[in-house]
Image (cartoon, rainbow, N blue to C red; front, side, top):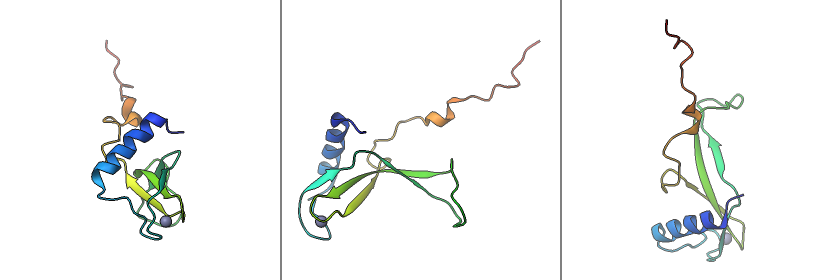
Length: 98
Ligand SMILES: [Zn+2]
């Protein structure tokens, strides 16, 4: 679950960047922030799902009236960690000294 502090940060960024938050489907103004992130897998083939490959992490806002889901890439919003934690493991297997 995303903390209330994080949701407020996300809401502030979206408020700053969107001229007006209006649902493109029903034209209402009430959106809620999803309780978790989507991590959209991108791949160059359609047979099967490639895990561990490139993704586009997003936060979604959902129209409280019609349920329209609007996804926003976290990288563009400046909400991705600067270092990818997947790269924490260093390749030092051959590092023996004599
Ligand atoms: Zn709507």
